Image (tube, rainbow, N blue to C red; front, top):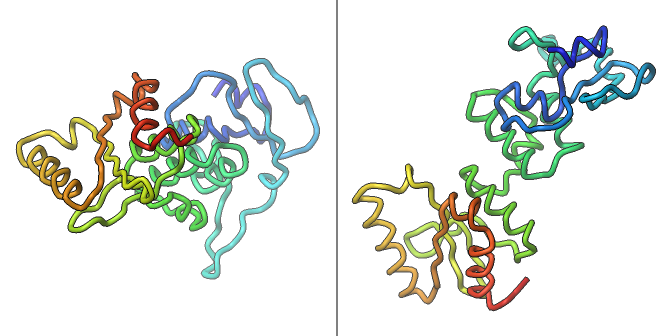
Length: 224
């Protein structure tokens, strides 16, 4: 609120800061993103990242049914870009994986979003899967295919040429005797089909990335 008020009339929270306010992304340290509906005025303020967006001053556009589509609203008494506009801003400024994550969170909350953003999720089904794709990109590992059917099972990630399957697990979604037995039966079936299987937890990916990179690199035959 302080950042928005400091930027004057028409200012709204936007971009990464708006995504955090809407609970689409985790809050992060650093400057607060604020958009202004003009091209003129002060361009720098300490602790604030100013975006010039004249389109915010335009009247709301209309749907075919005559309903208005606003670009800004108020949340927790803070002027902010709408979810749809926030995701559109992220598409222009944020890494693709963050756009996918924000889009998915909006969909889980029952908020309609732009189809273009919704179709850019690479078919992943969880934030951990998105984290793993980001992990591979960051460490220059070959990108796998996602959610591939092998026999009666669907694996999270597959490198077909290396015949390597990777499963990413959260403890709270893979605990219990049934899940334990299913995981081991899946691994046995995949090995009988000629595939090698690796499993990594969210904690391993976050806290021990060098070990995961070494293990995965070895499994991929040193491909980087």
